[in-house]
Every structure is written in C-alpha cells, then in structure tokens.
Amino acid sequence: TEIYTLSLHDALPILQKAGYLVLQAKDGVEGLQKLQQTDVAAILCDLEMPGMNGFEFLKVRQQTPELVSIPTIMLTSRTGVKHQQLAQELGATSYLTKPYLAPQLLATLAKVLLQDSKLEPLEMLKSIHG
Image (cartoon, rainbow, N blue to C red; front, side):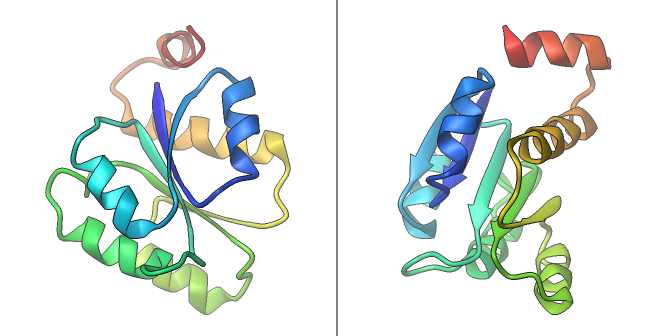
C-alpha cells in the first residue's frame, strides 16, 4: 500500500519499518503534482510547510475530484482546538499532534485505511503487510 507524506521526515522510517511504501514531497505544491501522477491509499500532511501550508493543501484537495476521497491525516505541533476544527472542516480524516508515538501513528493510519476500505479487517492487514 502506498502512503503519501508531505514534509513528515520523522514519520518516514516508522512507516517504512511497518512495511508501507512511502512517497514524499517537500511541500504541498510538489505533493499535489505527485498525487496527480500516483494512486495512493492515504496522505499524511503537516500543517507547517513552505509555500503551501496544510490548510491550503486541504482546500485544494477538497476541490480536486481525484484527491477528495483519499484519507488524509494531519500531523502537526499545533494543539489548539481551532486548528483541529479547521482541519476537520477542510476534510482531514484524522489529526495527530506532535510528539506522537509510532504505535499511535500506525494505529491511526490503519484505522483510516480500514474505514476507507471495502475489505474485511483481516484482508486489510494482509494487503498492508504483504
């Protein structure tokens, strides 16, 4: 299963060790360009990115038919309720605040993939982990 990360350097080794194929972008603009060329199972996005922040990315994602249905997890140091509410209003599937633990990240990712899937839980685990 391919997972797309936007500016989430710390998440990369966690996801790779768990068996995910991870594609990366340095910012939201590059991420949108790459997402137009690749099918992915989920998007992990930081709120603080150069050029296009996470909220701006979510706005564009909402208006892009090919992307709007891809589960998107926001990872951020912003713990305020207003940031979380805005992310949810803009279509974020889940919201994790830094620092997060590897099991928390992996459990959140598995949950959003399972919610988005038509597969039974056991089949989903097989498709994620080989």
